[in-house]
Length: 321
Image (tube, rainbow, N blue to C red; front, side, top):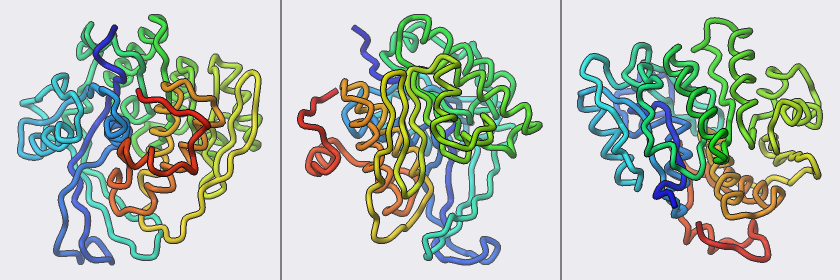
């Protein structure tokens, strides 16, 4: 039996979050954290008790050490993180918005260590994981990272492992919108569970209605699709069932970044615990609602005890990973 429950991969950046609201150019004090959609999901799953391996690259610099030490404290297996002596760790600046609107984020990641991920980074140990979670961010970083994404997803699916995929579109990282759509859909076809947002699904498929977007991916080889609808909740569709699951009301939205990552944590964790797809969406909505109530990308992701204590999302039975 594999010692790794979940394999996740991508770029974790250092993040400097403004302590004051307003134009980033005028902010004088920042708080150092980490950021990265893929590692947000990995952290969320680790907090729920899963054994998560993290595959990435960081620079041989202080930010790289900070990133790895932070991930290790969250329980991730970082033994597969390579240190790159030639390229730096990426970082970002993030504004503080006290009105609940989306913050401004400025990225400094071009040519980063993580953009030099390649198929050579894949080891036999990693391929023994029960599940692979992938997003559309690593393939946007570089051609070699795209090849690694495709290789990992193909080999894991061929080995009978489950694969989830969140498009997580980053248009500014792609040479063109057409290339982005082609490559992202090519990767989505390798996944069992596809988790787009509604606007992403519309752009990627050309369809407007959630049912048609989901049908597009089911026809491409997915077993199930969950489409995030923001505060309204989510729509899901499998080959046997479909429906809407209402969102969880939130009194005050503090930070919208990371809500989709929380949704992925809920979906993956519940499905690996053999819950039904509607039950998984219910948990996903709940974790997403927690994420928007905390400042920071992953600070609101719950522990297993917090998940168990709140029964509003839970099915009649619940099991540990």
